[in-house]
Image (cartoon, rainbow, N blue to C red; front, top):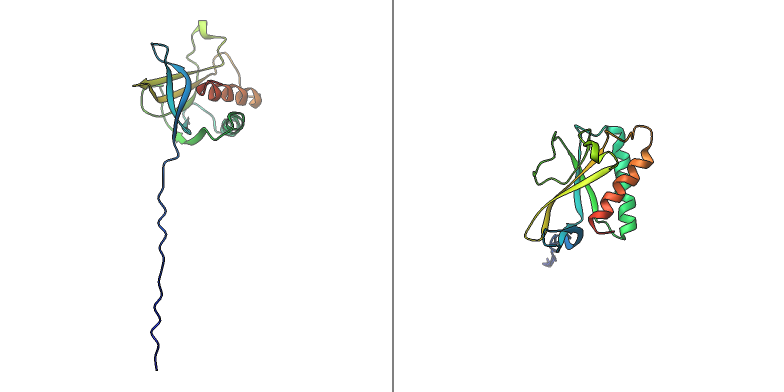
Length: 154
């Protein structure tokens, strides 16, 4: 005599939900209102301007900034090739020798592009014209960490 055994399978469906959060940034619009930014922000390393031996320092800056911000708000999304800072929708980190004389004391700067109260792109440009990061990785880490924290008003 044969017995029929029925097996019931339970399927679990995993729904991926975006973990991006809109939060206040350290940037203001023309009317003085605080802009929002979705975090975590993915930055891309400009490989045409940043030597490969500096990538580890960028990673350390991200790690320290996230630690000091108390959450993972900054990520490295990958690498990209771009010779100029333009409104391309990519959050970038690049080195530049194009700082003007009146900007000689700036180690780095960030530019944000926004609409409707929300930041759509942030580019961080590190001044390699007036600062030499070839032997001082700690200085590069601190410079970038400071820029990352400024995004969130810290």
